[in-house]
Amino acid sequence: MSQLRNDPERVRDVIVIGAGPAGLATAIAARKAMLDCEVFERGALVNSILNFPINMVFFTTPELLELGELPFVTPYAKPTRDEALRYYRRVVDTYELTVRLGYEVVSIQPQLGHDGEALLEVGMRHPDHGEICRRSQTVVVAVGAYECPNVLGIPGEDLSHVSHYYTEAHPYYRKRVVVVGGKNSAAEAALELYRAGAHVTLVHRQGELGSGIKYWVRPDIENRIREGSVSAYFETRVVEIRSTEIVIEELGRRHVLPAEAVFLLTGYHPDTAMLGRFGIEVEPETMVPAHDPETYETNIPNLFLAGQVLSGIHSGLIFIENGRFHGAMVIQEIARRLTRDRNAVPTAG
Image (cartoon, rainbow, N blue to C red; front, top):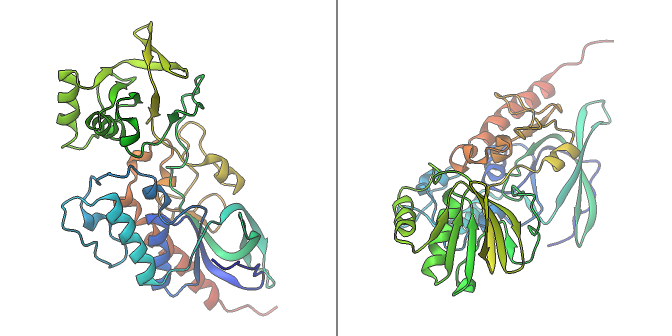
């Protein structure tokens, strides 16, 4: 990738932060509206999907993952992670989107342009290319929530054999593995680990599995627990993780379980520290950023949100299926404002 240079004179119409489905949908809408748009992503294209379990199958059907008017073609009723990665690469190529990968946005500052117009200056850095800045009329933050796991805050959570992300089962063959959580990710990980020959224990703080588990996964995990193939502790919390074991508390009593690997699949939340650096106010308890529910504009004028970043701690409320529509709504508002401003006739002094 060639090095980008600072470009202080050119003012973009829209800068999108995040190249996930919501960010790409925003860029497609901007392109259709003939707006000058640039997308910046600190990781890989659709980085969250890249970090999903390797053998993951989506809950939804392919048409509900589509962006723009590009069909998602697959022979399966439920698309796979690899098919999704291939599809979103094709989206970028088909719509000729300007996507810059490896650039982390570190600041967004309001400033005035040469003619006194309100602009946003976006500061970024790249591990190889250094720091750059861009100026834009508007910015859309579409960073998702998958990169910030909900931590338990217990001793040993940072040990090397502990992870908040599950990828594949093979490395854990014949190992004793503890999966913490009771929603879909935890259930699928427990089943895949069991079938790869791991000795699996599921630990969940609630009295039963979550209601949102995929309909074909629920009977499978329930039957494996019932027959003892997967051990399970409900109404139980992990209080400490050690190098080869964990300490759990079940109804006030503590037990020690062997654990050569631990997956803490307890959910994710938006990067509130990043939002704070941008000046976006965040509700402390829900982690929901301040925004207009109709336009998705934040408390910073001309700074918008799209996708899962809007959901706060309830990240399961916004998926690709509904988050992909935010971009079109935001761009409709941005295009309206830019058209109004450009058509405005200055009054005589």
